[in-house]
Image 1: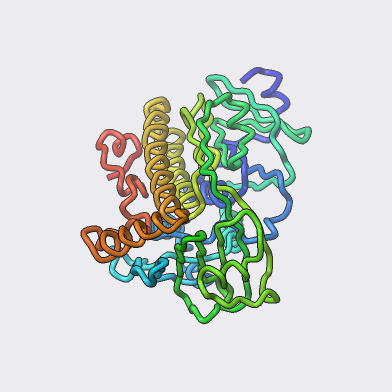
Image 2: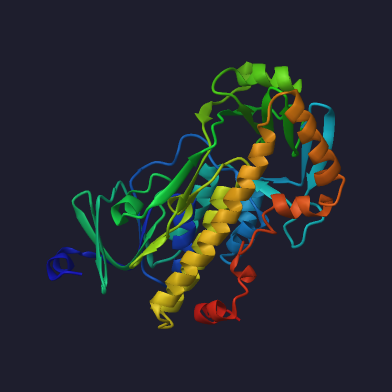
Length: 400
């Protein structure tokens, strides 16, 4: 770090996190719990007005339990224990979480705004964590001694910087990290509705010849509906394809999205590492993205503690992070693409094949026992640090 920057950089910390979404906030909490001085920089001054990611899987609840806050999430959310899958020929089967391993035998549905509120409250409990809003980082420099970030007329210096600034990551671009992007060529519209449509706390997926319809419970007897379409009326499409009667007056909002995948050539560069959507983008269908980002944050926090507090050499650990977290993200993205790919098949021949595969192989065949753990992300490689089995990596991280 050059002397001029050091003299001007009054905002110093051990770790500078760019991006105050769920992943950035969780990382700040995990680092703050270990007494590491953190500055978290977020360009927005208000939380998102609409509910984005909602699914929190058992591995993520395990990570939250390390902070002792998982119950506060569970108390505010809806525990989904069964996900019913319907095809053109009727009910195909149920992905049940009732018999999966561990204390959390469900997937938690919680609006992202509540997740942010709970994580912000937890971050505020740690005196070594400082949150700065309204700061957009526009420049980055680094050398063997640290990282300098500039934005909004301010300068921030840190030993390490972590990009948690989303799929359009400015830091990733500033680092010149190469990416591979792929569009899936399908489109969805999504909306939240008041009223539970008589479905209670269960999720329902309808895979039809005209396109998919998905429905998930939200707290307060609300539901999220996702329909495969470029545009249109969610109540009209849900009625046409799934026979569900939704009152248009109950609709709260509507948003369109087109799933895509983005893989980074590497997710570390010098003293900067990428986390969450900055490091990987995957189809949001199935809720893999935010949960994979939570696992990134868990690994990054343990790694930075090993470097900053235990004096472990940085290079091998950064190499471990790049290898393990890129591998886990690739597996999660491929799973998300597989699940979405089956669901978006249209036309008579393809829906008949899909119904056969799901009914006879997935839900009532040789893979039936694996469906629940698969959807709950328990069988994902390296879903948490507990599933990192490489002995050298565990030694470097200080894990038993």
